[in-house]
Image (cartoon, rainbow, N blue to C red; front, side):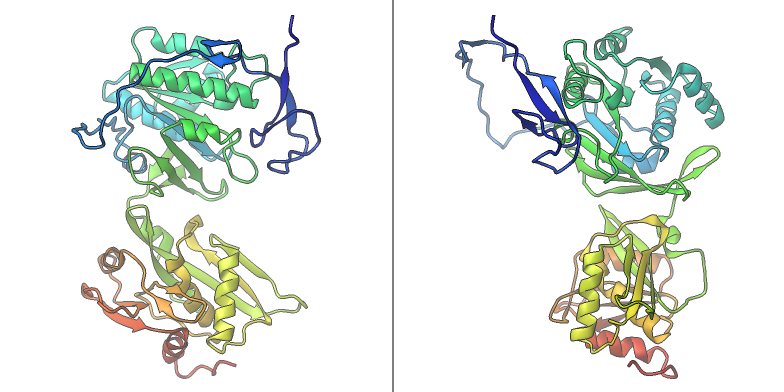
Length: 463
């Protein structure tokens, strides 16, 4: 009888090797490699060779395809991120830090669907029935028709979902607790995660149930387990935020049925997660008087324009190596903006500590924030207050040129809707309609320096 082969699999990245080692060669993680039984041979293979298969009919790209229906939860921020609602038969992976509110949000969504007369099931592998019921009572959802079960065996979960007719939506909390009897490995290992996710997604496709899988995240903020799970599902959502902060951001990083990088904003309260109707007012602050070092940036998150306050603090450093700290923005891009201000703008800023923060806990990734960051830095350095009602956006090149960015019209429309009066943008060959805003066009970083200093001529000159 042939000896059963085993493989050594990294539980962090899913990489395999022929022998054990303390450090994974693929991702560099330590003490994450464990031995797992080799996968069973492919069905239909004989003597190591695949048997002949049947040809599949080929079709052209052009043809009539119906728009997939949507299961609308009634929570508009969640439906927005999902692309208008969950698609029947889809697999959705939702990740986030422990205690961020994943289970609370999904329980609220199921309750709304149950009120609408849909059959929904919540399967918990981490909490007992009594614990889930206590949360439902605290949220005021105990009287809804959500069906509840606690189970970790994948086969039993699928049998339960089949009983009485497949539900419209099923939540599995969480995928790291599942185990398949056919896999000789502990729950949470790569083989168990892959087997559990594959079985549940197959059930979703066959029965038309939207299956929502809750996933844990690593300390780096990535969903724990092999990345192949993110490829298997149709949608990947990340729940972001600080547990010490009441605001939460739900972000779509993959969506086969809708736009990516869409965000939904929620506020955590005693009654659960409440939608934030106007996120721009949240990220702009609550009517504080303008202060040096603050600038309002018009950003785009998915299809939604948002006005976000950028805060900068520049102060003399007592250290030999000044500190550079950025919260909510790329620290490497901050270093680039500082270098451009010194080399192209003639601003002596290198001997100062620099701190940058994006208000509201949002993380900004687009380069359109360059101009607002530079304006906030200059404002803090010179003590100049950028006038209230001014929005700033544009990309800064290494040459010091200020370049226009996409969706300018949508950004200006959002600023005008919230009562802003002036926009500082990059000079473009075809200036956009102002929509009632005074538009100031800048070509180079020197133009920004001159505009910032001109806001208050009585302040000291830049060194």
